Image (cartoon, rainbow, N blue to C red):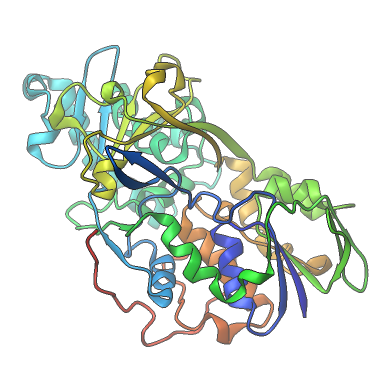
Amino acid sequence: MKIAIVGSGISGLTAAHLLYREHDITLFEAADRVGAQAHTMNVSLDGRDYAIDVGFAVFSDQTCPNFSALLDRLGVPFRPTENSYSVHDRASGLEYKGSNLNTLFAQRSNLFRLPFWTMLREIRRFNRESLDDHANKRIAAQVTLGEYLRLGGYGERFIDHYIVPMGGATWSMSRRQLLQTPLECFIRLFESLGLLSAGQDRRWYVVDGGSRACINPLTRAFGQRIRLNCPVFEVLRDRLGVTVLSPLGAERFDKIVFACHSDQALRLISQPSRAETDILGALRYVAGEVVLHTDTGLLPTRLRAWASWNYRLGDTPAQPASVTCNVSRLQGLDAPETFLVSLNQAEAINPARVLGRYSYAQPRHDLQGLAAQKRANELRGANHSYFCGAYWGSGLHQDGVISAMQVANALQMGTATAGLTERNVSTAGAVRAPESADSHKRIPHQES
């Protein structure tokens, strides 16, 4: 078949990788590069070059088995890292890092503060009770995180200094948005991050050389079929197939895979169906401004509290999440400056320390979106169209890979997915790919 793929993020590239052997694919990308959030920048400092990830950065082979298996299959090396979190409250001065006792009490006065100890007890209670309530179906699908916390009698210190920073740092949400998130989505996210499994050692990795190191191996076989700087203007569908309008004119295809954001896909479709309008329209995104810089003033004041992800509490419930990724720590970079990537804190950064500015969008998780995710099968193949993206799950690269596998399976490409086996599937309506003996074979970690 002749298949058009729109978008070159992890979902589009994985779909192309699984489809190109048996089909005539064409991948349309509006930007001048592929990879979307697999975005690595070159930075020169004191005569040395550094590869800095400003988008996707870290993953776990335990909660992202499909993404890990894809890297294995491509021979892309990845190495261990520390995926730690810290919290800094500008109003109260509270600071802590949740790695060990020394960092948890980086601010030594917390040893003598009863509210801090109460927060730690409530963390243990939430981890235990939320998993149990969810597993035993005691929680209705429409219950939000905020409602569950209120009914459970959890304190404001626990909510503001733990739940909001942990969720907000990953989803780029404000306090208000996060507490309106369905509890089901939040538990799914926390399980993916290993935050609900007390005592379980979660292994975390970064791609050696930055996330861009996986792009060439992934696209090498079909690189000539990728069109950069070629946005799709409109998609027309009829009984026999699909017409794609782009700067190159009108082209006919048998099928089309929308691997762009859900809202982008909906805008491209001429005469979308009622199901497409309802489902894709309910899967919304949250935009965020990202700055690459070296201003360590955005990190906690105590060096012991410096973590891979550093959350600063906002002044109002509606203020966007403010988080700084310590890329030097996460990627293990030995440099004279500390490379940082901050979200929604542009005004607080010393302009002389700014190295680059970018914009990304993350899926927004709400009750409408949760209901839409559960209707994914309604869109798979209707009107010659398929939709894949991390928005069908928790917004992680794992979810993007799974949704691309589902598209490949729906197009009867089961043999192409050998070596990529679905586990811990969080996407609704998952189609299981065939098992392979070497699906999760490890490769040696190479130090840079």
